Amino acid sequence: MAFISKEEFTSHIDEEIINLISRDDVNIVTEALEAGVQVASGYLSRFDVDAIFATIGTDRLIYTALMIYIKDIAKWLFIRKVNPNIDLSLAKTAYDEAIKELGKMQAGKLTPNGWPLAIQPENKVGQFSVTSRPKRGNYY
Image 1 (cartoon, rainbow, N blue to C red):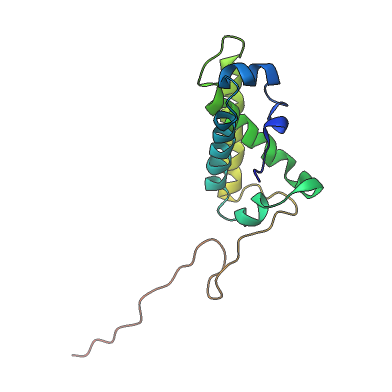
Image 2: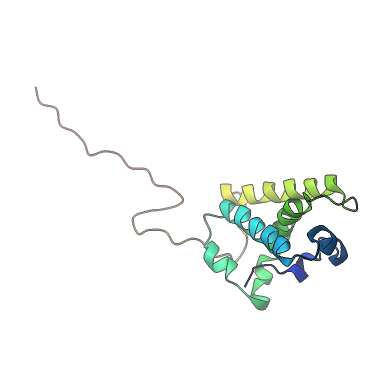
């Protein structure tokens, strides 16, 4: 099951407009929504994206902001099929804002409450680890 359905996507684009752009082909809408999820998941590597995107029902309410960002991204990817009834500049602005917010999450400047973090290996602390080579002894 998709993280965001076509019916939920209607919060960003009217259903009539979706049907006009996609010419009633559900695969085009699904492709745009899945592409939005893939773009967003690239920014969320410090979180357990498998757990986030497997969430269903009312448990998804914790990810409401993420769902809006994904819809903004998917809208931009979807409307590139171009329809004169869509305000492209507004959609581009929303897309840019969604990418900016996901960039904050990626950089660790923004951590949403309750999102599961990715599982860290035992010897790793934080997002990266710093090590050095073993000390070398020089003898003269």
